[in-house]
Image (cartoon, rainbow, N blue to C red; front, side, top):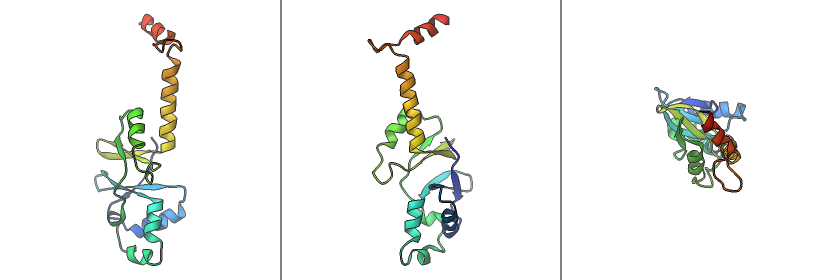
Amino acid sequence: MKPGVSVKLHDKAVDLYDYALKHKNIRQYFVVDEEERLQEMITCDWLFNVFGGMYGYGLHERSDNAQIMKQDFMTIEEDTPVSLTAAEAMKRGDDTVYDAIAVTRGGKYAGQVTVRDLLQSFLQEIVQTASYRNPLTRLPGNHAIQTQIRR
């Protein structure tokens, strides 16, 4: 999990837009209420689409984040297993499958997991599990047996 950038629900959207223009390395912002509970997510693509076009800026310069936030995003509790998170992430639609995943701790925003980080963690988990198995029988291999004997 990495720290993400959170913004307040009723902050001006135009301030977020200006910030996003200056910080192009940040791909998404997580909208939280006064108690830091996660509400929604705003991706830069979504933000630039809202403010883009002929009338976008004029229409939304007085809006707050609550009025422009994206409604479909994925959130997980901090202790959710990597395999379950990966399976749920891949069920998302084509337009959101690569969006970051919001992580909560007790219902409050704690950080984010990018799809890249999720895939790396999932791959590490699979490699570690495979390294402990006997290649012929697929049963727990020598490492697991030795660990049990030492106990």
